[in-house]
Length: 222
Image 1: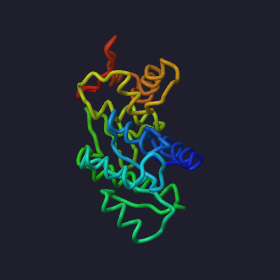
Image 2 (image 1 turned 30 degrees about the vertical axis):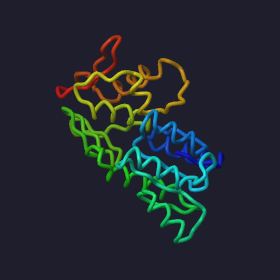
Image 3 (image 1 turned 180 degrees about the vertical axis):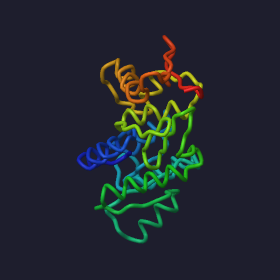
Image 4 (image 1 turned 90 degrees about the vertical axis):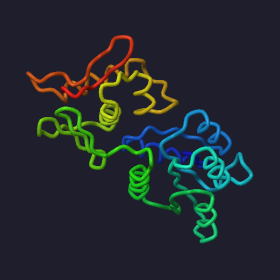
């Protein structure tokens, strides 16, 4: 997300995180472009009036499009004019939201853009007896519903999108937290432990395997 209003960026950052998204934030268009070039994102939220580039968010959108033709881009602006909307859409934006807006609408548009993205995976995942529905954020195992926090859901979602693959702790942090995470080093093992407690009843096999020194995996025989 590239938003020069620090207060607005903070509110949106928190709302998106609470919805289970890992969010990288910049307040400058040039820095935002540099961040995207280093590590491409699943979706971009760009303000139109941004410092750092002469053309602001519209120029940033154009430059991102020259790098990636498929990353979804949502533009935010306080300018409610047809000309502004046309400029944003012509620059390559997929959607446009005028300030002020309801957080619920922003989150709904983010979900819709992620569903339509060419790289998007099916919202419903099944690995063995585990089922995960990304659209409703529900998890079931052997027919019973399991309540997860946003971070627990994000960790399980990433593991289930890579069945049988050893996923490193750093990959999980990139997916479930963000690039600026500087918390304690045991955060991933802690959340894996939380998941194990919630996903398995007595007598059921542990769905998550630990590969010492490498990471974690989830297999079809869970």
